[in-house]
Image (cartoon, protein in one colour):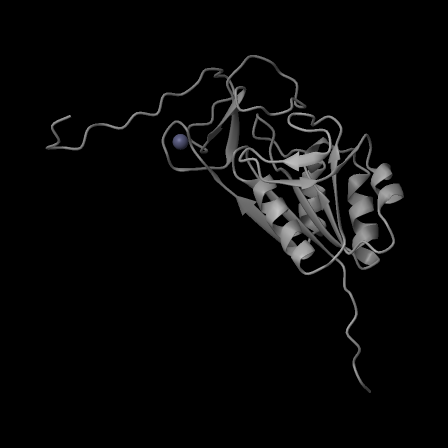
Length: 202
Ligand code: ZN
């Protein structure tokens, strides 16, 4: 009996703190799929209107066309029959239904690439990301650089007052921190300075 290769769907999650390059990585994967002539569609929640209404755009300005949707069920309505790869950016801002949508798409043979914050600014798991991480075939956790000490950062520090979990991250309101420099009670910017190298004239 000959084996016939078939399209097999899967879920990939790219997660991490703010400034960890999640969107850049999502765009990189989607662009590679486009180069392979696969039909790609990318979605983002309408809550995220930081840069452009029709593009997923990362902090470093690489971009890909994306469709803003108000709720996860709209993704199912808008995915076209010949779409092979579906991207979802800022998945933490979607409703709980996004988990089932990703499952359904993967089950019907679509490669789903999801990017999102794994933790909120308190360091708690940011739903629905934990469930997406659990059902994914492949998980990539990216790190930023701690702006207080310069080591690998896994957390997002809020540096302005406020307590809503759903605050669309802008550069001015957050900075990346490592576990030991992350402080939920602190709302001020860090000043990362390095001591002069011994023997230097500076
Ligand atoms: Zn640190």
